[in-house]
Image 1 (cartoon, rainbow, N blue to C red):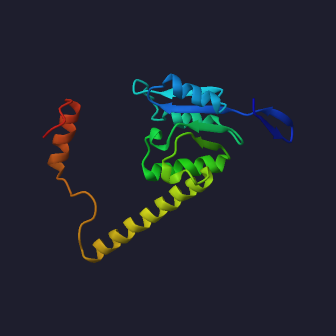
Image 2 (cartoon, helix red, strand yellow; image 1 turned 90 degrees about the vertical axis):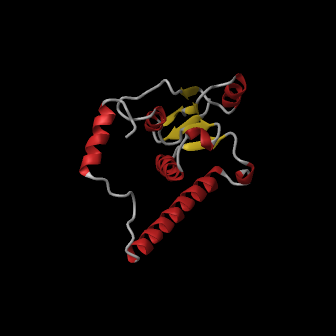
Image 3 (tube, rainbow, N blue to C red; image 1 turned 45 degrees about the vertical axis):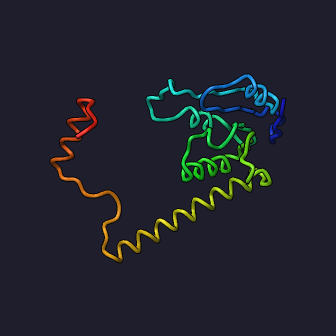
Length: 167
């Protein structure tokens, strides 16, 4: 069992595994081999009413020095932007993330270097989108979704309440 040292003494560190989907016997053994004492499995059947995912609740329950083990990054089912925010939250909370199965390209990176790479990549993507938006605005082009008439909005609302999702 891993221990944390604080000013008040020693206490057990939480080592939690997370997987989104089916858990095989081999995956279970891999999580246990990396010290996971708790394993959280998120399935499609689970639906949170408050909009918070099980992963969000799990992260909120972890504290400084705790460890979160995931199988791979794609298992988080997050966009690049969401990944950057997720990694920043873990860094701010001082929670260590262990990725069991990284793509070959990233095997030479430490987890911290990988987080920083994703965060930097997201920030660069944000700058590119902002620059493209500025260029489009200068050329007097409409940016974003096309405008929809109030009549069409009303039709969409009606169809949504009727559970008929086509116009």
